[in-house]
Amino acid sequence: MVKYAVKRILMVIPVMIGVSIIVFSLMRVFSPDPAPIVLGQHATQASITVWRHANGLDAPVVTQYLTYVAGALKGDLGVSYYTKSPVASEIGARFPATIELAVAAILFASLVGILLGVLAAVKKNSVFDAASSLFALIGVSIPIFWLGILLIMFFSGFLHLLPSGGRINVMLEPAHMTGFYLIDAAIQGNWDALQDALIHIILPALTLGMYSMAIITRMTRSAMLDTLGQDYIRTARAKGISEAKVIGKHALRNSLIPVTTVIGLQFGALLGGALLTESVFSWPGIGKFTVDCILKSDFPIVQGIVLLVAVIFVTINLIADLIYAFLDPRIKYSPKTEG
Image (tube, rainbow, N blue to C red; front, side, top):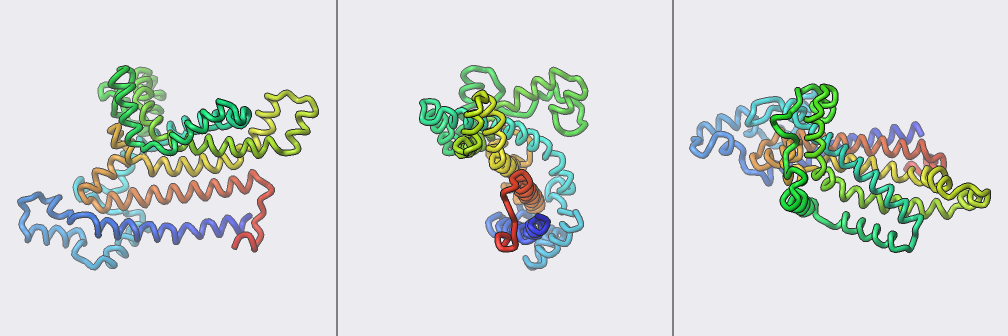
């Protein structure tokens, strides 16, 4: 187990190097020159040259990359071309919004997905099973941006029940403490702000969590069907244990081992995949911020965000693997299987 953990940790290094090279190269190949965008359309060639030299963009690409890596290893991700603020502070100001949205989305996806998966497995080949499978298929297939627009049109435009965008009413914004509006409002006892923040997060969370909910539903159903066919389940039923206890205590508990891994991976994906959702709902997180910075060719910000998301995703993946190995004693990491 220890050798496997060390090996998985060491695998993070080439992954991060590959991610940094790819994003660094793509930004310089496909993005326009940031100098004219930053300085404006009336900038002279001389001022553009001076600006590029000041930001190290006139150096060879390899030199630029090595300089960036050297700074990143020291915790310096650079400075935004526009705000002149450190990349870390720019990301830190917006990351709580993305985390809050991702947590709400994964809670929705996990609760609904596990419930639908369990009921679909228990009622195998029933109308409910077919309906839940169809619902999961729709969740996997529907584009996020289209789903978001449909939800806005229905709940905001037609029913007038929920706001169409934003994170909170600016008049109710709680005092900044943690950056998480739900937590800040609860700590301060600002119940109006808490209620308003909850109302604003419903549609974005449903939109972002729909795909993960479908994946969790299908995984839970598959794991439950496999578990319900095991001998110890038949033994428990033969002993006269109630069906609810057989399902809840014996079947579901063991089925949650692979589901837990999927939930962890989906949460990592939600943190990095909130780009479209945040853009549709004007959610002030790193997803929307990334889109804005890509359009403005703000290289340091985009590189910093992608690097952060990659670190989070790889870390969650590693933790999920280790938890899976810990929860399931049947898994053995011998030297042969490790290779």
